[in-house]
Image (cartoon, rainbow, N blue to C red; front, side, top):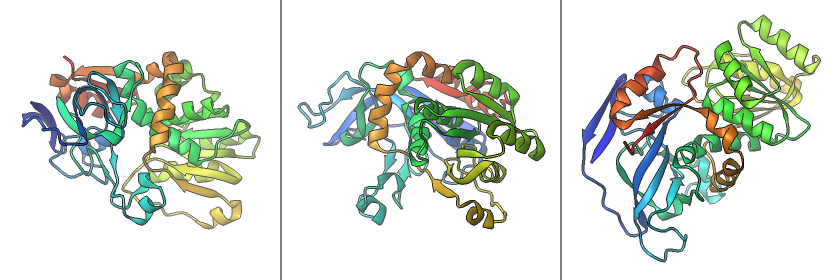
Length: 343
């Protein structure tokens, strides 16, 4: 079968490899669609913290079950269109013992610490496979990234009365803003790219935008929107020191700050502001089974809105072009890039 490999930074190839053999307790899956995540792009660029070369990328995907044990305890059947939980946890560390399997100390995410899904076929443990309930396979592909943001919004305790700022108008940022909106909050989105912000505003109906053109303009916008109070919840969805600082600065006293973005750089800042504002700062990592199950239902009820996150689709054979275009996208409304493995 064919598989996609990132061999080294800026070099992606389609290679031939053996089709996986299904073991007991697993299903053989035919991949239908796969999404290129921001972390996949970071792996392509050589900037992602957790990636080793060479590796098959991909942890956002939909698939069809082509071989499975009949009458399994999960009710999964041959022919089902499904999505999967790609975060493999060890099951015995302190985090796993407490049910925090998304924060396993030995977490291995597909396409990052272990081989990913960008192949014609993969095998998966049954407990990680979720029935798509008839959802279009292309939309099933975006359940996983939506889960990342949904989990962060839950961690941040977003409520209906909150004013929420999401810093970053990429896919995770848009999904975080959508998650907060679906919770009933008043939602503002921030980015350096006005084009990205315009696309987000036009297609998802957020309450406002902040063009992050300078520290002074950012502060001015925050003060105007919040009447000098600051935001109740600030969500960082970029992974840069300055955007995390933006969230610290924009938060109200007693506010919540959620870090979803992943980066390699350090931030040097006056940490006493955390004490002064009595901030609650949360890290949000991966997602849980309940997030996947909730979002499959939620996306079914909001398909028209959610499908606008998918902006570009490529065939598997055009994977080099897909990564190159995504890498060279300078502020355009290129959100979720999807690979069609059916063509």
